[in-house]
Amino acid sequence: MDIPRGKGHKRKKTILRILYTIVGLAAVAGITYYLSQLEPAAPSVDPATLWTDKVRRQDLVVKVRGAGTLVPEEERFIPAIVSGRIEVIHVKPGVELSPATVILELSNPELERDEVDARLGYEVQQANFRNLEVQLQQQLLAQKAAAAQTTADYETAQMQANLNQELLQEGLIDNLTFELSRIRANNLKVRNELEQERLDNFAKTVVAQLDAQRAQVATAKALWDLRKEQLKSLSVRAGIRGQLQEVPVEVGQQVSPGENLARIAQPEKLMAEVRIAETQANEVAIGQYAEIDTRNGVIPGHVVRIDPAAAQGVVQVDVALDGPLPQGARPQLSVDGTIQIDKLENVLVMGRPAYGQADQTIGLFKINEQERTATRVQVQLGRSSVNEIEVKAGLAEGDVVILSDTSQHDDYDKIRLN
Image 1 (spheres, rainbow, N blue to C red):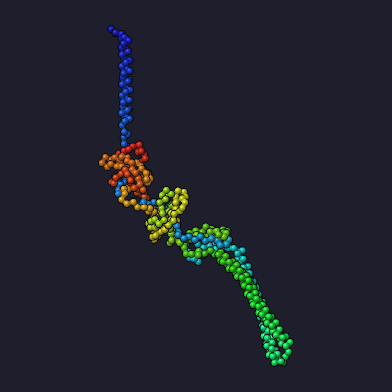
Image 2: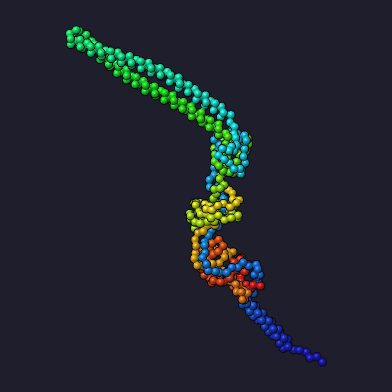
């Protein structure tokens, strides 16, 4: 027969259930705490996807690099001397020019009319000069004749006075006759001196008037020469030997004086304009050695000018080329320029990492070949070059480090190499 259970049995069952729950919760908490104290498992990386380098001791040539272009050392811009309309363009960019090569021709009917007027004006002034010269010569001759007559009269009177003085002494004439001859001789002497002075002044006047008229002739001649040169400038010539780079005008276009008609350069005399990041340009100096890579050869050179102002984050540095130009070098060719700033002797060097700049401390993974792992270490960097950087602390000679971007593993201090 069944025996009914009492209230004590139910109470005991409830207590056991509570104990089991408490033990289960404690076990879960313990396991959770244990797992939280474990380090996360190191991720695996394929070594073939990594860019690595070995730390070595050597001399480090500090360089900076920038993109640039080849430009002519000398360029000539040919402006329009006069206004006109473009009638014909004879040559196109790229053609080799001689100084006498006609690049294009302009037309200006008004200038042609001005040249004719200037020529006629010059001829009129020449005729006026010849006419004045004849008139003045006639007047001068008349003045000379008058002066000569006065001189003759004076000399005659003087001779008569001398004769009368002798006759007076011999008693052949009276004193009045002698005095009258003497007074007449003195009077003619004064007139003769005045006539000679008048003749000298008139001769100077003749020279002055002819000089004034001659100046007008020269002015007219200069104006005519100017009009002829302006008319001649309608045929635009190169003026120098070189290569035509640009003709920024079109047939039928009206141009004004001073407007650029053509640009000429000498392609055998080129230099490089290299754009250096403004953060690196502070160490660039005049005279530093440089190399210009044209992708068809490397040309040695040296820095000749540094732009005093930065533009769009770069500073323009001009490099003179010291070596021959490789085949295919031409103006506006894109090049890469490398400038040698300094040389560090016997320092630890490695390749530049994907991140991190000079004089910074960064974390890099150092490879352990035996354990097939890489552990993060703090590396103090020094001065940097184009592809290499100085190691000041954190690594030793022979250490192999990962230089490629490992930012996806920033949460780990160790990675496994498959």
